[in-house]
Length: 233
Image (cartoon, rainbow, N blue to C red; front, side, top):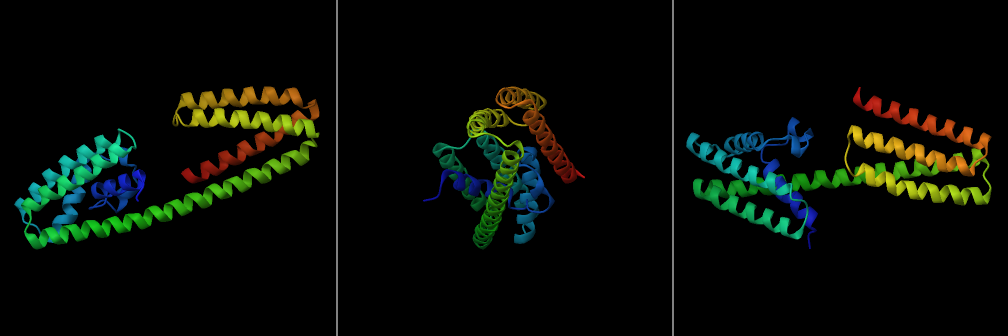
């Protein structure tokens, strides 16, 4: 059985991929207007099926209608009910398109949608694998950094346990703030959390250990700044 998320993605494929695969694929869905989606959908289908001017016009009206409805529906979030609504919209769109196309053209239209669907499924699978690989790499790096820090700080068993408790508590707090999305307010809250965490860490370390801790933290911060900066250059 397909998961709700998978089905929702498939439904979005019907909106996005019929003509929306070139440079526009690098845009986030929320940044793309229904009008733009409709334009590209219609252009591709009209070219592939050699539609008349009147057929293209009517198809564009249908595409715009459903691109608008699906975009609005996507904002409702992920749920079984949302999945069912997406499926209903896709079925309704097919029925309206069937009314304006010849039988052979409609069959070609369905084949085109299926091909686009399969192509996007493959792309999604590749992205999931890539994301999993990156996540595993980051996890390994964090483990190595943590080991290096433990060795450099020369902590006692009690200090290690105390530091672990603090890190786990603030990890949850950081994740909760990051879930709010990127903004100046989010960055401010993350900085406040970092300072609060450092104050707690300071209580369990001696002066020399805390100095080393801050130096290692600053090195990691600078490394991340350079890394993210290089991505935007």
